[in-house]
Length: 161
Image 1: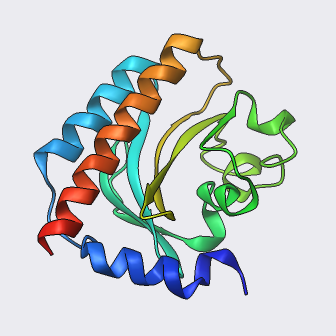
Image 2: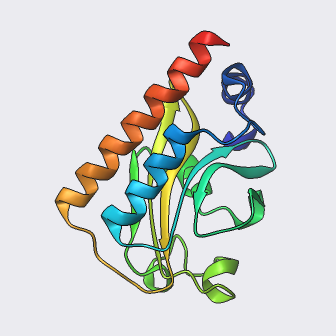
């Protein structure tokens, strides 16, 4: 069974009761801070259900979701790492054939931190750019700190659900 469809993971995502919820300032503050910290045009808090990536908060895009087939975050279902950085997606085997790398908007940078609640991957905090870029170890740590804040918010939400 593909990990995206894992019943325990989906149950945890449903327990949090966040999918299709209204915008919340705390999440929006984190995505804005990440965009500034990494100097990228697109950031989001992304929740991964069975068939889509749903954006709890997003900077730089108007849409609120994308289909699973265009998910960069799918990579988290194939690694144990809590952080993925693709400095040049065109040169990165994980992303070089991705439809949003080889076609519009020609994404060239991707960085994301795994969001886990009760040992289940429920989403990511992620950043994109249309030019390749490097991030410093300090920026990596800042991204991890921001992901920790999102995980804390998700945990609080789950506790009150």
